[in-house]
Length: 255
Image 1 (cartoon, rainbow, N blue to C red):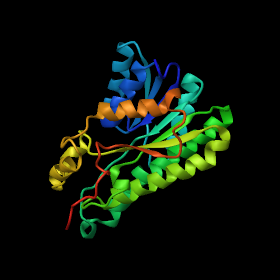
Image 2: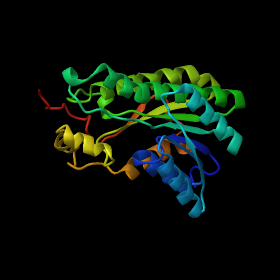
Image 3: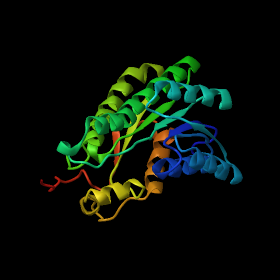
Image 4: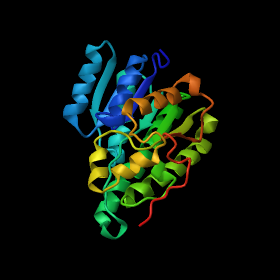
């Protein structure tokens, strides 16, 4: 039970990597707060975890609104007394090439994928400092924070920002014993795959991973679980690439 009695918040927790991580955390002893805009799926997951003997609650949260994220952290402490882990996982994508991207598309993606991560870091860090908790903040970055590709303009901009926010946060928060680390998934078999397919990127994503297949959400959850645990205590200020070698070699994608 590597996360025994830890209290963990997971944004975007109702589906995909978030759902897999919530199940992994709860099966390893954590009390889980699932945050998402999808009330139906989030509530159902909390009930599923409870039925399996775990502890979980759901809190509807729009991470693009700081007030929502701050309320989520307060709710967590009100419910479980503390906050040990903040997994800033919520993300969306708009699969359009640069010239087709509207200003609205760009802001929509950045509001969730970049600002939402910053809001989660800020709200969690403030509360951890207040409570004297030497916790860990984990940010979901991406291979697209490191390499260029087609069709994901806002997503790529936001994930690049998450990479540098993670490094900056680790420097700022180290004096309080708070770790900040990131995970960098490659192509993961979640609902976003349909967006890749529509944009003609699915075959590319598969081809860039060394074993030529999509990664399963549970495989990313295993990495996040390690980073959240005491076993991952030395990991700080870095992005752990969980990409099956995607960033190992130079991409051959061309316009």
